[in-house]
Length: 283
Image 1 (tube, rainbow, N blue to C red):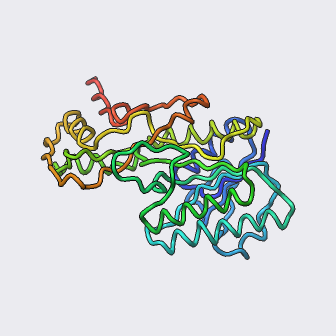
Image 2: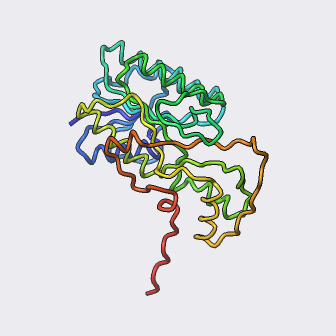
Image 3: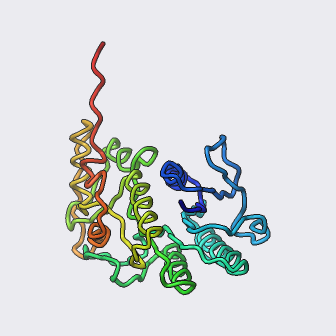
């Protein structure tokens, strides 16, 4: 079995580490702050933004999962982890003469398309936000180090603890209906499962593509999602907004490459992920 370093043990990273450990791999986590509770696998404390804190971190790993959180939406926070932190880690391993496989988590925010276009891994990445520009730079830096490294771009993550759309629906917000504005989503559990799936492929020498777009099977107008949620949860029906024809419509993300590799989504669409659980039967 493989030795794997998970850099960034937040909600998704920690669950990936647990799943990999369950498959028999040796897993070590790396966090900026000590974990709040004991873990079933070692979690080291180091700040990748400061190279001096990495000196005691072993380089004896077969694969590194880079799944960090900037801690804020400020561009400087993104630069700190996706430029400085990434370079510190690459240098740390290169200095030791070690070259593990890398899997880096990025975001579909790297796409600047905003007219409802379909995008995939070959689409141009010209993001509008400064934070997404740092993500694009990090992807390029990783591939410059080794073209065989792999990047996974997640769309909007939802699931336990990520109930932004449910809260908006509960408030009965007005929603743009025309022109349609598209939402691309992936359930937290599919984030975990897709990463484990790709890591297993990497370790098996499957020869992955350099990039995979991970979003569920159904990019859909936000109006449709919010109306469906309102019906499921008995929330107020949203008020439809008709906007000028040149209003932004976001993009539609294709997961065809990931599906062709064999990944099957646990939650193929928003209807599966947002389905209201049945009430427990009375005893």
